[in-house]
Length: 104
Image (cartoon, rainbow, N blue to C red; front, top):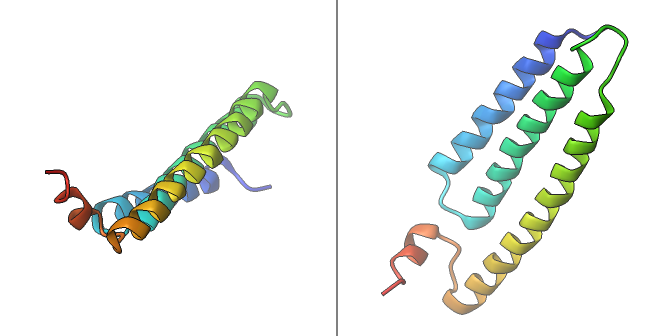
């Protein structure tokens, strides 16, 4: 059986990849993907702690929270991609540094 350490290390790796995407990438779609990777790392961490809290018992409340988080995350991604499509149509770029200069 896979231990808790494997899930925690995987979650940390996913979190680092998501932070890297947020810190380095300038494309709006890549930023949205980075946010989703961070959210998935948090969900994996939440599920792994709930599964290993007691021997032979998985907390169903944690799974319901993760399912709701996935649903809300999908809605946020849909709105973010819609904003990205409209920004690309209007300004012909997805670079957030160029888009932030268009404020005033």
